[in-house]
Length: 324
Image (cartoon, rainbow, N blue to C red; front, side, top):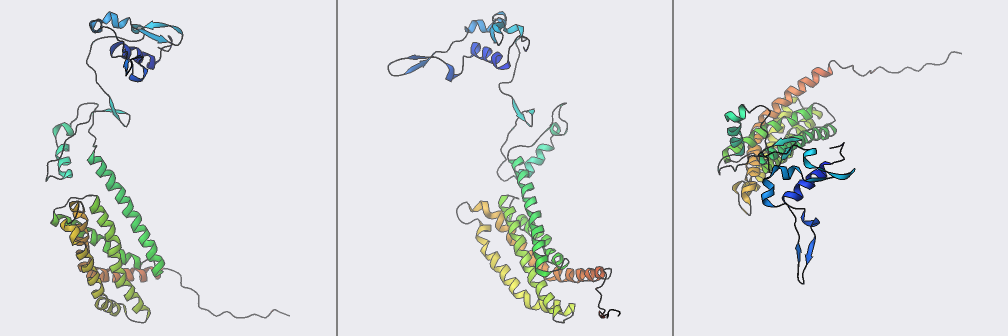
């Protein structure tokens, strides 16, 4: 083709015009009083079955005179694809299906990947997800990144607040409790892990951290005032349990309409309500026991680490008079 001055565009145009006619915008028009009639020119239908006629089709050349089609191609009858779909620069065949109502997307995906054809694909082929399955995987990855950055930013703010690198770890130990409670709430409410459920998980990160801050901050202030560690934790548990429980029940009550699916498109927000209520309830019950225990362990670790650090010098400086 390059030697004869034929491009792929001119080759495709010659075949397209001969078999189905030129593109609509390129067709000449026959003018009437009230409308225009496009003039489409093709070879006769009976000639389309004649391989010799097709082989002799002229193809425009950049060097001047046109060349025959069989000079730059091998013409034969065969079956071919009407369209070619590509994904990641590879040929792809898309097979779509709708999930039966009541069946989760992850369950249907697992059934598909357990098929013998999926486990043993033919040579040169592989199975790749698409559609809602691909969108859900991308959404999970995006929210995982957002939660990771959220944890890092929360830790940085707590370090600046407490001027300590250890006690913020105590506060953030309540985060796994909230995530476990959120998944438990989704299971009890029979809700899938959806976009709104992930939004509920992000909300829990701030709400649960607030409860731990109330406990740890009160205990740290009492220790700075001279109280022992255990006494400070006991007092923090007695005096901070009430506001923690009150805010938890208030937030849970506010999420009941969402968890019940009330309102317009309420079913979409049921996962968020179930995740928030489950995470708040479980984290509140366990944080009143788990956070003080972690406070003791982190305080011991901090004291142990400080034992290896050099202590600041407390010696007095003596003035020296210059020698006369």
